[in-house]
Amino acid sequence: MSETLERPKIEPVIGRYIHLDINGRAYRVYYEEAGSGIPLLCLHTAGADSRQYRAVLNDPEILKRFRVIAFDLPWHGRSSPPDGWQNETYMLTTDSYMDTILAFKAALGLEKPVVMGCSIGGRAVLHLAIRHGRDFRAAIGLESHGGYDPRMHPLIADLGYLQRPDVNGQESAAATVSGLISPTSPDNARWETLWHYMQGGPGAFAGDLYYYMVDGDLRNGLLAKLDTKVCPLYLLTGDYDYSATVERTMEVVRQVPGAQFKIMPGLGHFPMSENPELFLGYLHPVLEQIAEG
Amino acid sequence: MIEEMVARANADPVVRRRGNFVDVAFGIGIGPETWLVRIEKGRVSATSGGEGAAFTLRAAADAWADFAKPVPPPGTHDILALFEGGRLDITGEALPLMRNLTAVKAVLDKMRATEEVK
Image (tube, rainbow over all chains, first blue to last red; front, top):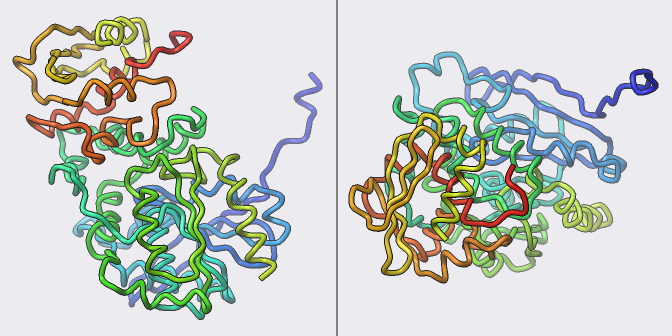
């Protein structure tokens, strides 16, 4: 009886929609935020959405000093695709990704936010630091690397099978990424992470991979232009990630003087959502350093 | 290893559910040895020999031994991780693998001994 009289648990996270004009096209974009202070803009992985940052958005320590903001890319989560999407193939490019992030940042009036992204978001923070380093206080790359040539069969590599009528795209998308999660991550967080993948719209995951595998490839010398004195770079990579491997992150570190890198044992490709407690232990010192700096 | 996997898979209602609409026969190669594993309407069976496999997952015995550990080391914890790391080969058709990946992974996970059957 007493249980029913307890106050309901309501999170500090607020969700809203914002209307953006990105290169002349109208988008309705969903974002969540919590906390106050230094803006911390969070970018989700390919084929998922901002729910991955649930733990960061709810962490009292972080919320004391940071205004955490996470948005769903168009075509993801609660950000609908633009009008006319039914006649298009979604393809995320370096330019369209950067334009989207900058439009969102400008619309919210974020002054020199810290940007943190994972996987495609981990690549995006590198592109942002290279192209727009002066506009960001620091960049945090989770599972970041410059690119690689997967061994995958072509059928698997471009995720085309997910849209076949004889394949269950929801189940297969989750099964495709399940091995990127550490076997030591707790079941509840693992399956919530997979649920996000099961909820992705058709073509969204594949369209994101165009940036991850093709257009956003940074094995082109551009990393030499990333100046950590202008935009400090912090990299965190889990040792169970077989896509963004520790070695592939090391290749970035070797090309970017001043980049700070820490391996996260026991984490995979989705650190913030697959094992939030373990991940926050690695994130806190980085945020501490950025706030003090 | 394979017989235990089959027994554990058939004892687990979750695996049965994941394989409910599945009908696939695939090979597991452990070094020179090959097993044909069939998942059909949630039931799993295995016979020696690889004839009739839609695809075959082949790795050295030590790679499968790592995969089967309660906490497999990084890179050995998943068939696609083993594949990307060059320790497992996939031959045959890719589509039946990806189409049935949820059930195939649920069965292969049963190479790992767990304290209780869910």
